[in-house]
Length: 268
Image 1 (spheres, rainbow, N blue to C red):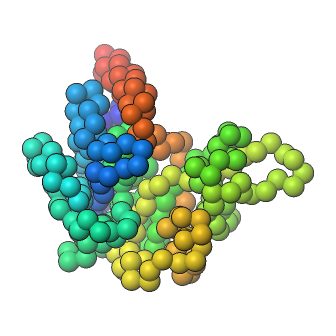
Image 2 (image 1 turned 90 degrees about the vertical axis):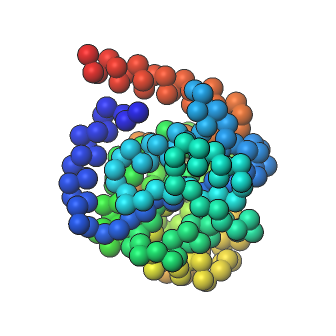
């Protein structure tokens, strides 16, 4: 179901998309997960999570093709059963980015958007902004939201990004950046793991291999910065709510039910 507040914005973007660059959306979906094995298949309101993600991305009408890239037969069969586009990829990929490159490398694609397979609430307006910036020749596009959460600021599980004056990333870190020397209230840009790549940049990313900073912080986007590529950051209110653990399903279902109620209220 499309969010009622997003639809007018998406219609405007679709009009601009006509006869423009070819952009695919790829949704990597691995079965293995240390905290939640098989999570792409977990049921949310009676439907597999990966189906929610696929339908949310596909319904925007922003992409020439939407593909789920997986390494597991059960996920492949699930996607095939609901009529989604799915490709089986090698099991040995060390990252979702490598998996994406396997899918798009042989196709006449100009850009690709990497959508996380565990975010069934993905915001269509954010996807549209990413596409627009790719069309403006940005080599890589990602997103972040503003936060004053002190617990997140000090946690290595929450990635921070510092920006220049044109909203390009200067650095990403699991550490607390920027450092507030005069003890001001903690505030930062919280990175969201969604990426849009021009195809030629994605190829360079894969070919250059793991970098020092990437390996140190375990953040693959640092490979791009170390190799001189700029990353445009979209400032958004969407907070990248995903499913990392089984208990997260209850929260996602609650939000979906609230959205559904809001949709029907707006239609009256």
